[in-house]
Length: 367
Image (cartoon, rainbow, N blue to C red; front, side, top):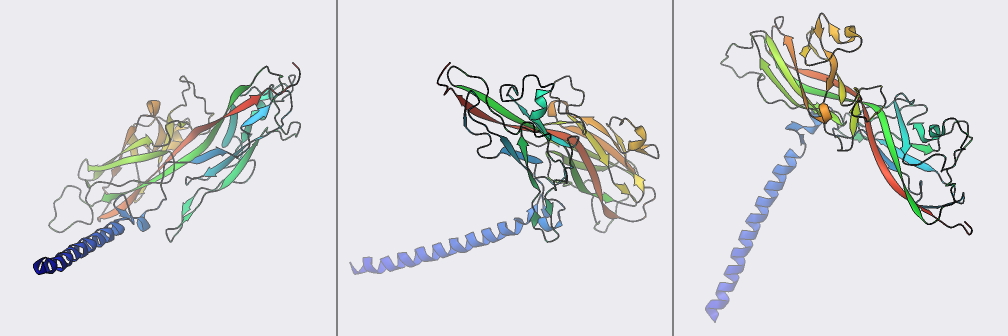
């Protein structure tokens, strides 16, 4: 009995030591993970230029607008309101040419627009902004995030104030349901930056450690937006020339669609502007412009060409599939080794939508 009593404290002591060692190991692991928590794609978060993310504008119905239920026979006036928030990093300008919301799924005449009105559907389309701008979110100098702007779009949209509410007109026989869909269509852009390696002599071996490696993995950084550059690679194609290849991809929600910027969001398969992105390689290397292949010329060829080198144009991402573009830079004038930024702007028109079902109740006392 005495031996058993002596063994018990020893077991407790042994367990305490093991627990302490495990606790120390766990703390070390958490510390190590915390150190990497400030990294984004292998880079320190403080050294990256953007917040990131794959969202532009987000839209949602304001609670109660529309209500879950209405009644028939002009008994229940109501409105439809949408809250718009810019969660990406591009500013949206005012005016319907820069962005609008359109309601679908309801017959405007059934919801109170006079039958003899020449254009009933005009009350179902409104600019996202009548005036001012909807600022994008941005990263502050200290790493904090400044949220993007918000606005509310109200329907029916009638600057002339002839119709300020919807009302279900028909006198129905039994309840029915309608689906209200709100389509957002707006101009947006994504900025992408990637560090490139620039060398005086691309092929000559050196004994000293280089400041950078041409073929090292690249880490593209994208501003918040649904279309992004997801992969960048660099390779020498001669003693004084590099090739930069990058992949453009739709990373937004599955129901989102993109079009040529400044066009309507026409979802028909035959629309030639569907799945089109305008790409502009903004960077030069000490005055040398990029010369790119795989880009369709813009309507004004001079807009995308400098010194007979094409740096801008359109690409079509068929059915949203990714697309690769290659550019070359002449480095014959370079007399040192350094890193430089490869900056690309992607411009497009983006469309997203939300839906809500409304129950229309038959509360009429007479048929």
